[in-house]
Amino acid sequence: MEVLKRESTPETPMINFNSENGLMELKGRSIPFDSDEFWLPILSWFESYMLSPKESTTFKIKLEYFNISSSKRILFLLYKLNELSEKGLSVKVIWEYRKEDVDMYEVGQDYAYMVKVPFDFIEFEDKELAPL
Image 1 (tube, one colour):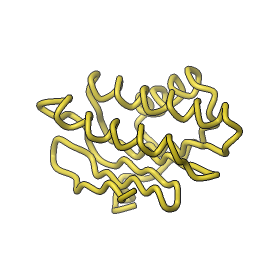
Image 2: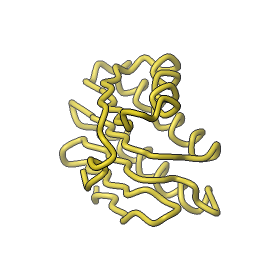
Image 3: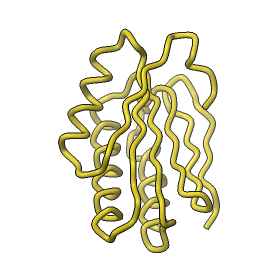
């Protein structure tokens, strides 16, 4: 299975989903004009990953902003992580947010409440939005 990699744009996040090491990364902004066109290949890739996952999967999210349609897709991916966890595999989410962005922290808390996967919350300063 190939690595799914996309560079960020002003409307879409950087995607780096690596089936070899079980690390999935989203970084930037997610406000795509056509949500289905952007997200469906990502969701499809993840469905394929689910067929032969690594023993340990880490989902790293470092988004500065996302819209409601992206929120639904992210939640879908988090529910998929639940399925991996229920199979006895190691799964965790690393939710990175700006220190002063209380809203993004609370969104992460809401997601953590909705799924059974452990979340690690990491604050960063504005100057730390450098590449992952």
